[in-house]
Picture (cartoon, rainbow, N blue to C red):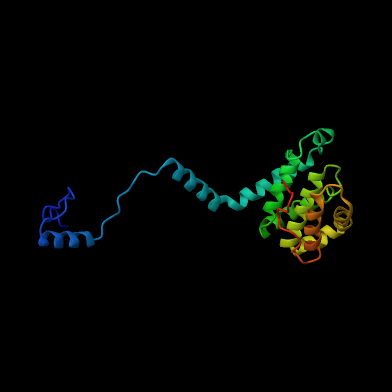
Amino acid sequence: MAAAAGGGGDRREPPHTLQGLLEMAVAAGEPQPPPREPMGEEQQQWLRAAVAEALGGAGGAQEELRRCLGVLARPCPGEEAAERGQGEMGPHEQALELLADLCESLDNATDFCALGGLEAVVGLLGHPWALLRAGAARVVGACAQNLPGAQGRALALGALPALLGGLRGDPDPRVPPCALFAISCELGGGTGVPHNPPGHP
């Protein structure tokens, strides 16, 4: 290793001669470990999250599916839901929104159906609260779009008549786009409307 090259040395002063410049260039070409800088807190958090996702992503998603289904198993909101503002979401609506996002993955949609998720969600297509009707339609559509076996299961559970009712005559403008998306996926098209349709909170 070149130690003190042409006045450059460890002080990293610029060389003053052509020979010093040449020696400095040769020294710079030698393999050496890059300097290590301490990792910031933000980088540490990102790394921990990335490792956790890589090592336990599938298990974490299944746990989320179970948690959301647990929320849906509780009594659905009644009068208190109608008292909420237009953009407010309760735990049932939030659970449906998360389920719709999770079921964009084939593996998650498969797990969701194996856990009895369609049975839990199809029954909400006729719920009095519009956000639940719209959210349930989105979940049915996501499952049917990404898992062909879910189409027949949802049809057997009576999803199509409920979705057609939501498309043709729902009084809330947020429901028909979600119903259209689900119907198109049920019938094998999967191109109805965006996964977050206009007007969906």
